[in-house]
Length: 432
Image 1 (spheres, one colour):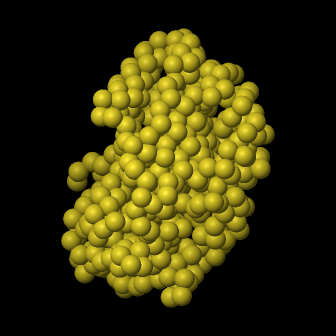
Image 2 (image 1 turned 120 degrees about the horizontal axis):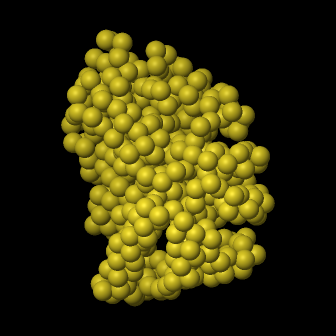
C-alpha cells in the first residue's frame, strides 16, 4: 500500500502489493501468482524515468534485493549482472575487475534493467546505447517460465527485449560485453553556439564522445569532448576542491538557486539564462571512464527527449531556437544535444538510422506543457522518436509509423504475454 513516486514527481502509483524477491525462483513465483489471479505486475527500477512506465496500480516488483555481478569472464569481457543492480554499483564492481562499459549516459542512478528497457544512451557517433552492449538476457515470462535469449538463442525475443519497456517479462540477469578499463580525457568549455552548430558534424565525427548544452537566451554553449587515452596514460583527475566547486557548488547549488529565483520571479528567467551562458567555465582532466561519463544531478527537472535523423539536426535546432522566445513561460534549463550510431534493436530510438538526440528540460515546478508540446511538433516533422523513459504524448498509432519493426515487437509481445500481465496505462497508450 506504499505510495510510489518517480524521481521527478511526474508519476505516482499506489500498488496493492509489492513483491521483493531475492532470486529468480522468487521472481517467477511472484509473477505466477499475479498472473493466476488476473493481476498486472510492473518492475519498479529506480524510478528515474520521467514517464509512468513503472507505475503499478496492482502489483509492483522491487528488485533492490537482487543485485550485484553474478559471474564474470574477465578475459572475454562477459559479465552477467543481476537486474536490480544500479549502474553506479555496476561501475564500481566492474572497476574492481579491471573492466568497463564501452559507453554510458551521464546518470548512474538507474538499474541496469531499467536503463536498457527504456533505451538509455550516452553520446558517440560510432557508438550505440547501453542496450547495444548486451550479449544475452535472462527473463521470466508471464507464465513463470525462465528463458534466455541472445543473437543465437530466441533471436526475435532478443531483438525485442533489449529495449523491451518491461512489456515482455521481468529481466533477471543481463550479460554485458565489457572491455578492459580505460581512461577518458575530458575537455569542457564554453564556445559560441553558432560555431558549435557550424562544426557539429565534424566535432561529432572527430571525438569519441561529443555533446553540447545550449542555455536558452544565451549565445554560448557548454561543449563536452571526451576521448580515449592510450593504455598506460596517467590519471589527471580534477582536484577535489575544483571538482567540488565546479560540480557541486556551481552546477548544483548555484544553478539550483538561479532556477528557484526564476521560478519565483519568471521575468528574471531570460536575463538569468544569459547570465548562466556567460559565466560557463572551462576544465580539462582525465580519469577512469565512468567517472568522466557520470555527473551528479542535484537539481530536479522534467525532461522530454527525441531522437531524430542526424542529418535533420540543423533544421530542427533552428526551429527550436525560433520557438523558445515565443513561449508564454520562459525556460530555465539548458537543451542537451548528443549523437549515436544506428542499431538493429526493434524499439531502439536509433533503429536503422544514425541519430541526433535533443533533450529539453524545465525546472521542476515551472510550466512546461506548451514547451514540450511545441518541441514534439517540431521533431515530429522529421519522424522524431521519443525516449521511452522521458515525457511525450504519442500513442501506438503514431509510434507504429516511426518504428519499422513495431509490429514485430507487438507479435513477440503477444506470444510471451498474451493476457497483458506486464502492461499498465502508459504501455497501453504507447504499445496499444
